[in-house]
Every structure is written in C-alpha cells, then in structure tokens.
Length: 224
Image 1 (cartoon, helix red, strand yellow):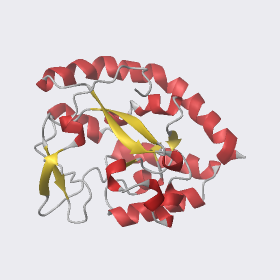
Image 2 (cartoon, one colour; image 1 turned 30 degrees about the horizontal axis):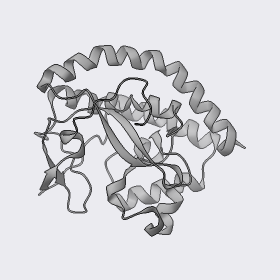
Image 3 (tube, helix red, strand yellow; image 1 turned 180 degrees about the horizontal axis):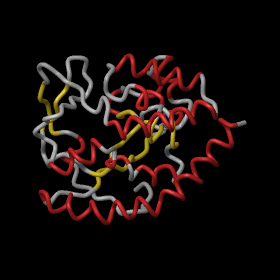
Image 4 (tube, rainbow, N blue to C red; image 1 turned 180 degrees about the vertical axis):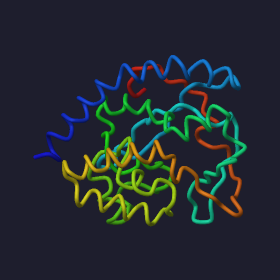
C-alpha cells in the first residue's frame, strides 16, 4: 500500500512544503550562477525514469560552459574536489547539494520521488529492452532526489556497487526505509561526507551534458 499510494502522497506533501524554500534558493543562486560566466542557470538532463520512461531532470548548473567530459576508469563521471570545470558557486552548491533542489519540480510533476534510486543518464544504455535484470529492477520505482545509495555512500562506491545498492532499496522499499534514508541524507549533507570521487587519470571526452547545454528551464515548467 505504501509503495503504490502513500509514497506518492508523501512526495507531493513534502514537495509542496519545500516549494517556497526552493524559490528563495532560486532568488539567491540564479543571479550568481548567471553572472559567473553568462551561461544558463539551469540545465535539463535527460534521465531514465520509472519503467524506462525518459524525462528531463532539473538541476542548477555547476560547471562552466563547454567543459570537457572527464571519466573514471570504470566509465563513471569524474567528480574531484579540485575539478577545474566547476565554478566557485558550483563547488558550493555541490557540497551543500543545493544543485539538486530544482528536482522538487520533478517530484511535483510525477517524474521523481523524494527517495529512490539515482536517476541515470539515458546515454548509459542502448535502450530499455536491452537492460539486464538488475537495471530493469532499478526502474521499477521512480528515481529519487535522494536515496539509499546517496545517503549511506554518496560518491564513495563504484558504479556496480551503486547498482546493487539501488536494487537493494527497491527490494526492501518501505515507509521505515524511507524515513531512515531521509534522516541519513540530512546527516550526510550536513557532514559533507563522500562528496567527491577521486581518479588517478580521468579521461577527457566530449563536452559534458551540463556544460554544453544552452537550454534554460523556466521555474515551474514541465517537459518540452
């Protein structure tokens, strides 16, 4: 019952309560991000949602425009503490997780949940039908603004371990689990633990999705 009804009701209630705080954050951050390099305040990131449906996930932009994409050896995104691609305000909003707050809009629109597996790039996969069983199971629920993996491990584990943690959450989803994840997330953000991933030799590829986008998202707008 919780998974199919009360979880969504809980998401909507929390998102509505958080919406005024998001607007205050927007009023403060938007001019700073814009004035940093003239780029867009937001970026739209295509992600795989529940049952493989693609949606646009909203975030505050933290990287410079036209920055190169850097990958770790396992193919995951490089995320170092002194990443030169990230702006000064970008470092702050990443450490405090404020870059994720626009996803409150995704929650209200039904794309995401407050708590769930991490929303993954559509470019990570050839297509929904080609996904293996673990990845399919991760898509049984809406992706979350935060989740079991983000709360307990954040960026301290590799891609395969993150996948296993996401599936563990899906298999054990309950109200009690979500409460534990919520409070663990608060502790993790306040403690700023495991924010960065180190990489000995990141590989530069094409400009990142965030850095190259020129599409600006209007607050409260739905998918285009």
